[in-house]
Image (cartoon, rainbow over all chains, first blue to last red; front, side, top):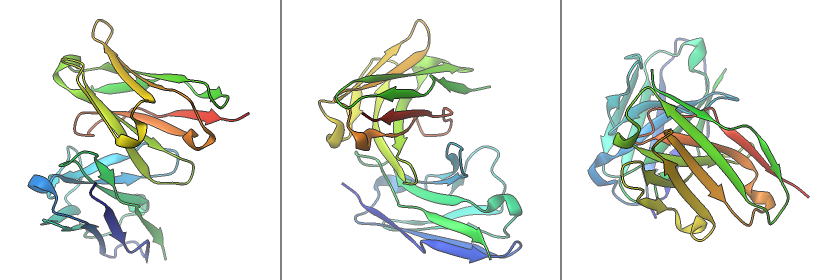
Length: 108
Length: 114
C-alpha cells in the first residue's frame, strides 16, 4: 500500500499570498496518477488536479500541480477568500487508492 | 449535467448492516465505474473500493474484504454499497464518486450506535 504524507499540516496565510502544499509518497506513483482535492466543511471533496498536473474542468488557473515519482506539489498562486479549506492528495495508480492526511489552509 | 444523488442518513446498531444508494444521471451509467469513499467525523478520506458499472467487476480495499458488497442496477443507474457487521468506528459520511473522482455525491451519514 502506498502511504501519502502531506506537509505542512496547517498553512496560515493571508489572501493574495501564494500557497505551496507538498505530498510525498512512500513509493513511486504509477503513471503519476496523483490527484488533489479541496474540501470545505460540510461539503464533498472537489477534484482540482489529476495526473499530477492537469486541472479539472472549471478549476481556475491559479491552481497548479507539479511533480512526479514520489514528490508532488500543489500551488495556489494567489489565495482568494474561497480557497481557505483542507486539501488532500490521492494516488490512484495502485490499489488500494490512498489519500494523504490533508493540509489545512487557514486565514492568518 | 452529471449528478450523483445519495440516499439519506442512517442510524444503525452495532452488528447491523447498512445499504447506501447512489443514483447517477447526466451521463451513460455503464461507461464509468463508481468508487466509494468514506470520511469519519473530523478525519480524512478513506477509499473503500470501486465497481464497474459496465460488468460489475469490483475491487475493494483489503480492510473491507468480506464486509462490503458493491452492486449496480443498470436499469435505474443506481449503485449500492452495503456494509455489514457494523461497528462504532464505521460511523462516517459515505460518498460515491464517479470513476476518476470528478463528480461526487452529497454524502450519506451513517451513524453506528447502541
